[in-house]
Length: 316
Length: 288
Figure 1 (cartoon, one colour):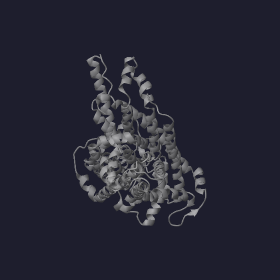
Figure 2: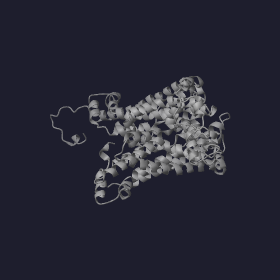
Figure 3: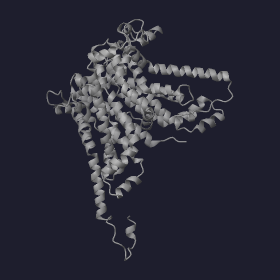
């Protein structure tokens, strides 16, 4: 439309349509107004139930607050306490331990399963559904079944494991050295299908000709994986690993159901500790300070993800 | 996901080798499926076992005798109908309201021109990166001051919209062609009419996928209902059953029957629309 105004208007031109100039400005204004009306309900909800609590969490982390008495400003006291609190060190280490074990295991198993499922296979649809099914189920509820499977007296899995020599007298979930592996196992079982599906999408985007050509040139299965599949899945692997790490840092559901953070706080993760300090001991100020550590960890991973995908994309 | 992507079958192998290879893969496939399904098979099998069968040693996978007693008892021992209804109202309510609000905001962000659009979008991206656990304590505090703890609105309203939902729908709406809506605009249709009559019908597949995510996420959620509804009559199934287990450790028959019933809606949804579900995850990488 702007080009039209540069043409000399013929003397006999019909009166211009009422579009340009002020009218167009008012169209734009009307659209902007409509946009804000459309967004208003969401923005109100987000402001009241996300943004305000977020800033409030920052404020509370500098106070001592237990609901009954008004918040009292204590400066950096909560953060100083956090640095020297063995319970927090324990929760942070447990969380990092949980993340460091379950992330690579989940991602590795997911890749293996995706490669398997990308082949011609008997019962392929059944296998894919079986692996994926735990993803959609409530972790809290299936953890009850896992709890029962691992029961030292009447649990099927602990009985079977006992037969192959893995015995726990107190039961897996009351054994300080086996409780963490048990909740890790359940975490991996729950999420592996999710990452598998993401890997499958990546595998299917690799042109088949690459594999065929390499096979004709005499490359074996391992070489084809190493030289074709793995490099072409680099982005997918990065994305999945970061997503998995973020998810594992927030582990809570199966731990709450199976161990409540025990025995002897051996499975208390950061989120479990926030729950205990905040909602069992009602130390809202200290719990808020702990939750900011979680924010830092997760935000850091998210930023790493953004930075990685800005910098490089592999394509052939 | 069809056979088109499978590598070509090896040529020139002897039929015996091929048959042996097929047998090996079949065993591997069944073994993996058995590991993945074991807790679910155990859950279903136990829910039909009589009490004596549940506590016997050594334990067996399948029931000696099938009974429905736990399915009858569960309604009396736990306020199970109440938990179920609460979960339907909570997950269903959040899904419907959130789809409406998310799509309205996504429409504005994807299809309308206005100043501040990028600012709003960046704010939503930032919210997407922050873990919701950090808001739990102030949110609880806020809902206490509203008198909303142990209420349905307390559970639902804070989830009435969702940064992920807005982001997901915005990305989808950006991919739609502009012609239809421009034509409608020239015909003098209001923005609401365009949203309602032109864009939303086109967005139906994305709305269905997002609706599934919202429903599944809230149906399954533990931490939020655990904190907001400490009173059992306002709890949802995951929190209610987790607490019941904490109090009555050994009543596995009832717990397993309750678990089976609690998982059924999501499993049914999933089996019916599995493909869409899986595609949604493959394209977004986020679980709602």
